[in-house]
Structure formats: C-alpha cells, structure tokens
Length: 113
Length: 113
Image (tube, rainbow over all chains, first blue to last red; front, side, top):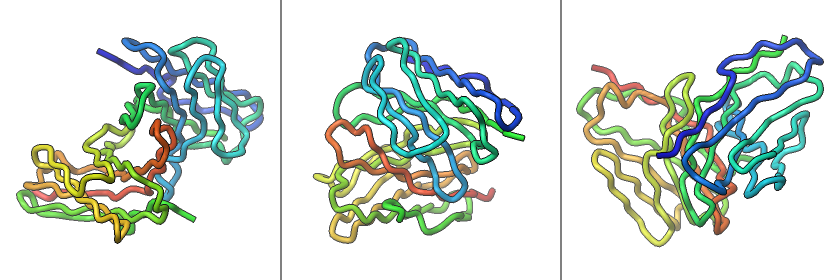
C-alpha cells in the first residue's frame, strides 16, 4: 500500500528565516506530486506540482519554491519567510495517469511570527 | 475569480437526515469532479468522483449528481451520521492528467445527534 509522509507537523518560524518542508511517498513509483496551501475562504490552493524528478510547475507567483530531488521526495522551500506565508500546507500524490484522485498527507501548520 | 464555488460555508443537519452539499463552477471545460472530506488538522481524503459523461455516481451513503448544463454538482449523504461532520471540498479538472484540480472554498457540515 502507498503512504505519504509530511513533516514537520507544526512549525513556528520568525519572519525572514528559511523554510524547508519535506514530503515523501512510499509504495509507488513516478507519482505526480503536489503542494497545496489551505487558505481561509479559498479552499485548497495549488502551489506547485511535479510529474517527474526535477520537473516543477508553479501555479501562483510567490515567495516559495519547490524541488523534487528524488522520485518520491518533494520539498517546499523559502529563503526568507513572510508573515503572509503562515498557513496549512498539504502535500499530495496521485498516479501518473489520467483523472486520478489525489491522496493527501497530514499537513504542516506553519506560523510565521 | 473563483472557478469553483461552494456558496454555503456551513450546513447543519440532524442525524439520519439527508445532507446536500452544493458546488457550482464557471469553467465549461471542466470534465472531471471530485469531493473530498477534511477533518481539522488532517489532510483531505477522497470521497467520490464523477466524470462529465455521467450525471450520477453512487458509493454507499454518498451520491454525487452532475448537471452540466447548469454547471452544478451536489453531494448527497444519506443517512447523515455524526462522523460525517467535516469540511467538504469540491474539486474540478479540465486536463487529461487531472493535475490541475481547482478546489472550492469548502462547506463545513455539522451533523447533530
């Protein structure tokens, strides 16, 4: 069976500090990977998705970046956090074929002070 | 401009009765739709999907109805149970690989015992 891990579960960081959130998937190969942010009143906003190693698509301009150094590893980063980066970040994966549901990780609650 | 709308931020239903959650979309190119359920501090979990070639899909207590001409879909839960209390997200996609799902803002369902 497939599992998705995301850490840390909660994180409190000062403004201007760097960020690294990690997501890994087990039990499948070549998944599509996604980073979402849950924003109040806007549901789940897709930030980045990746269909393969080193392939990143960005959906919205922002202070964040993503990388996929390995097939089942997806990292969300920032060089300098802003207050507006606070939120609930979710990683998800899906099979790399048509019209498949996405499976979400437990999420990371990020608070920038 | 939100392409996927869930106009009811919250809904309360008595246990045993029917819950109806609504979702409207504006993009006529959307042809695949999903519903997710989310408990606090957890990642969303997939509930049920429907493609545009169908107008109804049923899975146990959950049924999704799609009205393409009205650009409207709904999720029916019968009978509602207290464990169904959660936030429900509607999501839609137009591309062949289902990568770019657009999520609605969610509806918080409370099932009262």
